[in-house]
Length: 243
Image 1 (cartoon, rainbow, N blue to C red):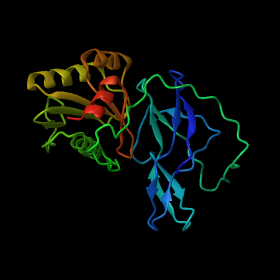
Image 2 (cartoon, helix red, strand yellow; image 1 turned 60 degrees about the horizontal axis):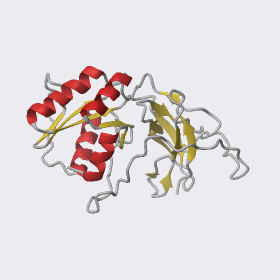
Image 3 (cartoon, rainbow, N blue to C red; image 1 turned 120 degrees about the vertical axis):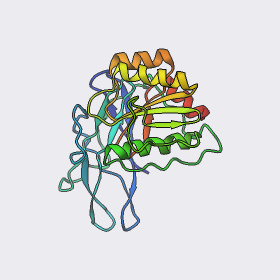
Image 4 (tube, rainbow, N blue to C red; image 1 turned 180 degrees about the vertical axis):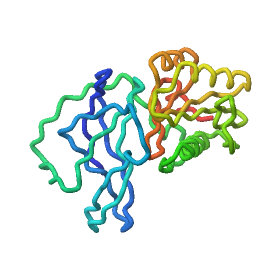
């Protein structure tokens, strides 16, 4: 089991309890990137595919591997980069640490097991913009949407994924998704009598988040592990009920 640590968003001051994702090493041992507790998380304002990887050493076989940089999506729309201890740095003491008190976050994602028949979601690592769309498609299918199609060429409407009951947009850019993008997605869903779902790697502008709450558009943020995280109540409801 990985050890969690308190993380405070520097923008909205919300507190979170963060546990890094665990990956299997080539030797089979589970690995979690060692978090640098003394460093503060930083909002991601610019993202490049090459800079979002960290070197992690396997404690079992000493093999060095490249793993996605740990990230945390805050409900305010900010995506935080969680610092990782360099492989050359010594591990901190196991006990005696002073940790700040943790306040309950105002937005609590519902358990992923709310639908009893749903299996564990298996994400795919995101290295390209196309990977982000693929990860979103897998997540929608996991939620229960069938026949979710990914066009070879992105249409002018900006809709990256479409199914009989769902339309979705995936924003892999380095800037927060805009109000206009959320409204255009909602209109597409309205005209198709489908659920509109938005996925973003860089979070959402404040007005976009507020408008999505008004329209009931589920918003998700994605990190490079390909695991979407809900950032509003509509997204929580979609996870709880499924398609």
